[in-house]
Length: 290
Ligand SMILES: Nc1nc2c(c(=O)[nH]1)N[C@H]1C(S)=C(S)[C@@H](COP(=O)(O)O)O[C@H]1N2
Ligand SMILES: [Mo]
Image (cartoon, rainbow, N blue to C red; front, side, top):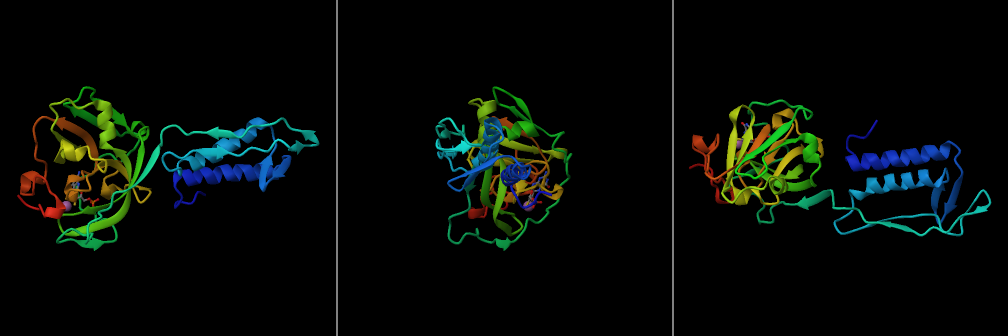
């Protein structure tokens, strides 16, 4: 069984290690050089293993770092045969696929006025949509050059963000420092290309819930379409399979059961904004009601 506390990268790394150990147990010829054991079952397999190990580790590389795959040195002999000289292979991963960000508030005190800290999200209701990732479609439309329907897999093709941040519910609770995983709305926008008429962004959810923000807010790097909290898929109560996340606004702007993102030339106050709540909703200014 995989340890549910492991990240996908850690699980892959653990599996690669397990395969390596199984190769050893299977009686594969092994040489040990400089403390590194190599199973010599053919150069090909060894390179595969090294690549898997690297892949497992790659997601941990900070941006701008590169990984080196270690290879046996040129003095190695295997079954008495001298091995050809092998140059160390230096691989530069392509674009970083995973970015970890600390987007928590640096204000003192860290809690906005009138808020109390909780240790978990509180389920605040709302009518769920279809929780299936396989059926999921995010419709991105409106004032954009390339209106696009994104499947869940499509979203996973974009740079994955693991963002530590704080959220603040207008009813007075805040959850500080949870890790939210997803994709930046800004990266999606880069693909759909909002026209120069687009000034507002409407997050659209199942059964007609909406939340509006101005486009400058929506394109901030901490605004995500999110599908995990603390490395677990969103629970249904918290918006599965995908919700919006707008950490610098009261939490009602973070639409659960997200179905669409609409770029608009005009503002459309959303579900709570048309029921007496503030149109902008900055928790630091206590913009609770209109
Ligand atoms: N689709 C949808 N999204 C929604 C809501 C809702 O009722 N429906 N409630 C909002 C409110 S008022 C808050 S405080 C947060 C609560 O998120 P949580 O239930 O995950 O704590 O979701 C927001 N997003
Ligand atoms: Mo709320």
